Length: 514
Image (tube, rainbow, N blue to C red):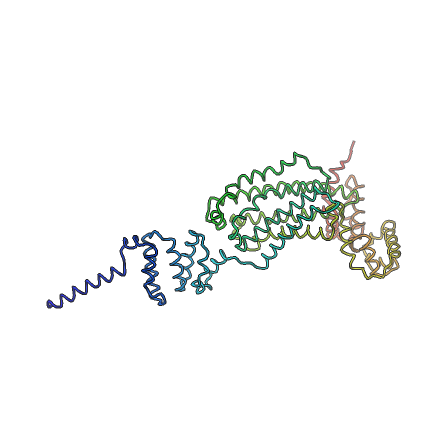
């Protein structure tokens, strides 16, 4: 090799080393640069070109590997570059890291993310942070507003039991708080108002006490005493326990909402367990109070007054069950839950609010403790006969004849009896017979038949103190054709099965064998 050739080779090697050194700065060069300087160096690239974008991305990654002091800001730059390059997975990873460290969700609104909008990961990212609302969320917000409004107007109802109304309105109010917080969380709007976090937790142990005291009030006419305040002590202690959450900073509450503050997950588990224990204990007490009173109402001929309380109790029981399923699901015992499971408890709560609102509109007397299912049904049937030609005089006459047929002739014992044959016995039309039953008794034909039959059965059971009769024989005697129909009718009227009624009756009226 000639001397000239050697000189050219040495020169070329020097140029290569110099070029490599500029393209790949050493560790110290990245560590000593500030982010603006680093950005300036990156922006010297022509980012309209794919290759330059890739090279810039590698430079940012190198800076990240070298633990640059502005690593968090670099997460954002890497996420945006990956989005521009349609690398949805890396864009998702680095955007998530940036948000976790800064709580700045605006990155997902950057135009770069429009290129990867169709990616499942990016959709999940936006669904987690961006506010969104659907028809079910609108429904929940509406129910919450209805509940708040109802809780207010119930306390201004004239000629009502103010104590009972205060209890049931408070019960509806805490339902509405829970529904509202659930809707805020489901729509990500709670990220905009993080101070609403866990607001329903402050009332978690009030459901049972409020409903229990309400049932005692409307069932027994119970007067509240200072000692009853002990029912609210657990909730007061719970609020004290939750003070660290309520006094946390706004950013900390957002981190809790996003599940980034792991120690605070303990609070949710504790509240869940305590709430289940409270709901179960008070549910048992309410059930015992309700069913104990049922037998007395039946014997006194006032079995209809329990419909309102029964429906409240059953809806509340449905909520307890749905809440247990929800809790076991999110804890992993039942596996991964579906949207249906997550919404079950809120749907049950919504039914409670709607039912109380419906009763407040259709039958406001329910809140003065003068309710009966007959009067409820009568109000519902009234519009149906506004244009009827049946006069008041004829209506009263038909009613008297119908009462005679049922009380003296006991025509309900005829298993073939129907509305047509009844109208023939009354010498009137089917329509008139139906109207008389609806308006004067507040029920339809089949319900009226069942009422008389079941009352007859109860009389027979009360006389059969030694239990010599078979249930099915009694059913046939009063006009039923099969045991299934009889059992359903009996339970609908009494809230008990025939066997349960007999057993309860014997406990309350033991036979004196002496």
